[in-house]
Every structure is written in C-alpha cells, then in structure tokens.
Amino acid sequence: MKKIWLALLAAIIAFAAAVALPAAPASAAALTEVTGFGTNPTGLRMHLYVPDQRPANPAVLVAVHYCTGSGPAFYSGTEFKSLADQYGFIVIYPSATRSGNCFDVSSPGALTHNSTSDPAGIVSMVRYVQQHYNTDVNRTFVTGASSGGMMTNVLLGDYPDVFAAGAAFMGVPFGCFAATAGDPTNPANQAGWNSTCSAGQLIKTPAAWGDLVRAAYPGYTGRRPRMQVFHGATDTTLAYPNFGEEIKQWTNVLGVSQTPVATDTPQSGWTRTRYGTNIVQAPVEGISVAGVGHSLPLSGMAKMVISFFGLDGTTTTPTTPTTPPTTTPPASGACTATVSLNSWTGGYVATVRVTAGSAALTGWTVTVALPSGSAVTNTWSATATGSSGTVSFRNAGYNGTVAAGGSTEFGFQGTGNGPTTTPACQAG
Image (cartoon, rainbow, N blue to C red):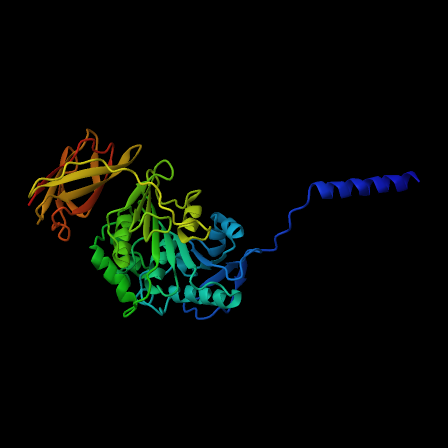
C-alpha cells in the first residue's frame, strides 16, 4: 500500500509541475545541406535553414560567408539564424569550394546577368527555395561579410530582378575587383585578388561606378535593390575608402543625392548616414565604425540588417537626424569647407565637405591645420600635398566643378588626433 501511495504522490507532483511550468515546444529546425538545386557552374555547396514557424509566403535571406569560411560557419557565427526563428524568414548559406573558400567577384563570368560563375549558383539556390517553399519573390535579400560583402554588391548588380535589397559588411563596390583580375602573369590576380581595390585606391566618379552596375544587365529598366553598407574605419584588408566608393555607386544607381539626409549614432563609435529618404528602409544607408578593423559584423548589426530589409515589421518612420552646424553662406565666387570626424585612440577619419558660394567653382583647394603628432596616411577624392602640419588638398579630376551653392566631399585618414580648426577653402 505504501508503494502505491508513493507512486500516486509522485504522479500528482509530476502533473502539478507540468501544469505550473509547461515545457516549450521542441524545435525541429536545423541547418541542412541541399544538393541538386539547379545550375551550379562552380560547384558551390548549399545549406538551408527553415524555421519551424513562418508565414505562408516567407521571405528569403542569402547569407554569404568570408574567405576561409563556409556556410555552416557563417550560420554558427552570426545572429541570422536566431533572427530567422524570431521573424520567420528562410536563410540560405552558400559555401565557396575553391582554394581559400573565397567567392568569385572578379571574373567576367561573375560580373554579368545570367553569369557563368558563383552568382549563377547562388541564384539557383534562391530559385530552388522560392519554388519549394512558396516564398514571396518580392522579399528576397542578401547579406555577407568580406568576400560575402563583395558578393553582396555583385549579386545586386547582376540580379536586380531577384534581390530587393542587400547589406554588405566590409565589402567593395561592384566591379572594383575586376580591374586587374585574370592576369596570367600574376598569381594573385589569378586568384581574383586586386590590390589596388583592396587598398582603397580605386577611386571613380559616382556615374562611373553606376555605369559598371548598369552594364552588368544591359537594357534592364526595373526596380533597383536598396543597399546598406558597413565598414570599420581601421580596416586594412579591404580599406575604409571602399565604404565611400560603395555609397557613391549605389546612390548613383538609385538616383539619390550623395549628401546624406540624416546622420545619427546608433551606438558609441557608430556613425549612420542615410541617403535619399530618412526612413528605416532608406534607399542607401551607411554605417561607419570607428576604431574597428576587418571584423564585422558586431553584435547587434544583424538586427540592423533585418530592420533595413523590413523583415522585422519595422515601419518606415523617419528618425531625428543630427542637427548640422549653422554656417554662414559663402561669399560670391568663394568656397567654404567643414570637417566631420570619426576618431578613436591613435587615429581618425575626416570627411570634408566643400561648398561653393553664389558662383560655381571650377576647382578648389582646402588647407587643413593638423595638431602636433597627426599625420595623413590615406586620402580619397582629392590629392594631398604634405602629410603633417598644414596639409593642402586639391580637388580630383572629377569633383573640381561644383555648381553655385552646391557641394562635394573628400576624405582622409590619419594617425594621432584629427583637425580641431575649420579648414580654409580657396576657389580656383
């Protein structure tokens, strides 16, 4: 009898515990490999994550890894899987299979619609998922880091009919790596590495960058994908000037001004600029991170990507931009310059805006007084004379002409502390 009562008591306790603390439903979702997904000229591998809870017509995110990485590594090392569980979108994780596990972003076959290289295989993965999971074809997105960030730019250029938006971490503009790739006398170029681009020394006008994208799919007149770019200001693998070149390219492709409509600081050291419209899903958005090298995404950035894509239901409510400093209008025929800084211990990046007066400029020179111990190490969209003390920056060949009341920008990176006084601008 005692054994019966003990058994009954144990059953009652177990039942009460079950009522008081219901167990969470077990998740059956797991990363799985898919083979035979369609055209795959370079033998990419495909891994797929399909969350248990998703809408009838889910969105699709392609998440592209860095060199030496893999789809499973990017799955484990980023927050996109947990966000997919939260918001119900499907994630495709491609894997490169060539030596070094880098994606092809340089060959002619990679830089064209209906490509004959890695982009073709990735788009086959997308179409496989669209067909097998009845996804919303208007909500297909791509993100990636380093080699994957470069591939994000390439996919948006090659397949604007497939992707609605992209988010590139530590990438370079579409076509940037094509400049010297494929040279049989240069082993690095055979591998698709372009030192001029990686060093941030390939500088083009917005229109020239935009033309590279438009040439990838001749005759295309449909929508163009929105773009979000992230870059660390001390990145030496794919140097920081590539951040500005990406913004030049995609603002041109999307037909919006290079002048940001809003600037804010989502976290300490992060500077976010929006172009075209000050909304969460802006046409183009850039996030620059002070004191950080080639190590993105950081915690919280994946959620910013999901919001930019609209996968979290975020509305497009405008945010409050940073109020720009009040400046006196330039005099006729003159110009003024203002500087903004992203600083960290031991270094900085300066962005200088040159504004014309009531008459157009046909050339300009900006003089910057640097503090003791400061030295310019890199310049873009201008030519520097000197590197310490008083440094002069002369316009590049493509940005010397500025309409009356209009403006242009250049930038430089340096060691030590950035300038603390207003630069001087001279027209002509």
